[in-house]
Amino acid sequence: MAAGSFRRSIASQLSKVLDLPPENLIKSISAVPFSKKRHVADFQLSIASVIENSSSDCLAQDLHLQAQQLAGRLKCDSVVSEISAGPGTVNFTINRELLAKTVLQQVWKDGSAYGAKSELFSAVPRQKAVIEFSSPNIAKKFHIGHLRSTIVGNFIANLKVALGHEVVRINYLGDWGMQFGLLGVGFQTFGNKEKLKSSPLQHLFEVYVQINKAAEDENTKKLAKDFFRKLEERDEQTLSIWKQFRDLSIEEYIQIYKRLGVHFDEYSGESFYQEKAQEVLKMLEDKGLLQKTIKGTGIVDLSEKKDLSTVSTVMRSDGTSLYITRDLAAAIDRMNKHSCDSMIYVTDKSQSNHFQHLFQILKLMGYDWAERCQHVSFGLVQGMKTRRGEVIFLEDVLNEVRSRMLQNMTSTKTTKEINDPVETAEKVGLAALIIQDFRGLLSSDYQFSWDRALQSRGDTGVFLQYTHARLHSLEQIHGNAELADVNVACLQEPDAISVLQHLLRYDEVLYRSSQDLQPKHIVSYLLTLSHLVAVAHRTLPVKGSAPEVSQARLCLFHAARSVLANGMKLLGITPVNQM
Image (tube, rainbow, N blue to C red; front, top):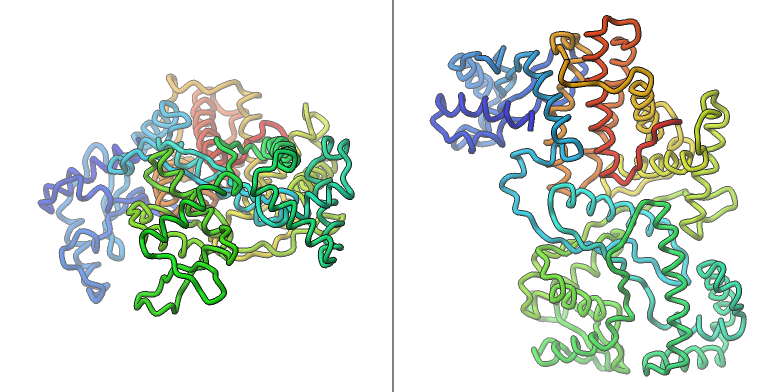
């Protein structure tokens, strides 16, 4: 890794002066953050991180003085061309030609693994993670929370795979419960087999809306209860109706997920854990954790003082299981089946309480691995409506973003030349949705705006796609860059150095995202890269420059496009080559 070789070189010189092992210093040496100032250093060492017993009350001026003293004891060499002290940091500038040569070679050599091979990850063991995400309810609206869960879960899975971990992607469907009693009765009354086959999600939703109007009617209630009871008793005819609903819905979901570029290794669901949930209740009882209330419901006491101040209800009064009981059964089953190192659940933050209870009960049951279960929560999206009104299906959102993007593209001059404008509009539109969603902290709520998301200038997914397409067309026009004959002395302009420095920062950005599972670090990095490239594209022309200069610049732009594409793919965006 380019940054790695420089960090190691700086660490080895520091280790002699500070009398500390170089491996202890590597994490304290970081790329200098992006700044609009010209001529910034490449790496910095934070003094506070290497001084023993450095406390928060250590005065800033003391740190600055210590930085100056340390800088004075260090010498420039063939790697480092300049050393200076900043506020609490020692700054290192890498020999400019070496910087260009090393970064370009590394991007070329590592390709899609650039950044992921960094020594920052050397102490991180390769692990297996089970990630549950998307998880819509059959026959109910695929609301916008499911879209967030889908793209966030996909990002986490992509990131983990890129860093060498093994991932199992699970879609845990809402495919059981009282609503299937209603749906079954509704289908017997209002259902149409042809419509069910041609558009299952739409038809089941219409049936569900119709039967819900009659849900208060005593006779309907009784029929729905009977239908669900038959389901629980595994009545063959009732099960085959339910299975048809489930199978056809999954087929349609797979087509929609394909448009999103998302796949799952397993389609699971609450229905799988009916019997196993009863086993969980038996285990809770055997361990003395299950208590009965006056009403006959089953609860688990989660309070510290065991005074029932915090309880979780795990059983209905008739002995049937609840959502949390099925979740307990699913967690135990997954751990037995996959022997994973971590289990991640991606849902909105309104379920935080549910997962706290789930993990606490698992711990009380004696499952130490509950410590390795994690709920990645996200905030709510307000204001996402299509032109037809409220969003009911994910497909509505995808169609809307595609048609709006197509309209925007058609109004610009270049779109006529695109081979497949509809597919391009879909990919660019999806990038717009994902970047608007990933720009802030996942836990924050945000107000969705079509206009803001689809702007071609500014910090949007459209701008990232535009940058990628522009760099691709540069290579189409001028031929592919060849690294072998690059003269790096031709890449010494400040705008070229700014791009090279930013490429150096990529491994740290990946590391940060891998630690907190937030995509915003990568989004911010890619947007900055695209802005730096836009400036360099203006000031460092390939066309009309001397062959040696244009070849070096082509190499720089190729490296930028390669890293931009890598980052976009991690976020779940397919880079386009024309737009």
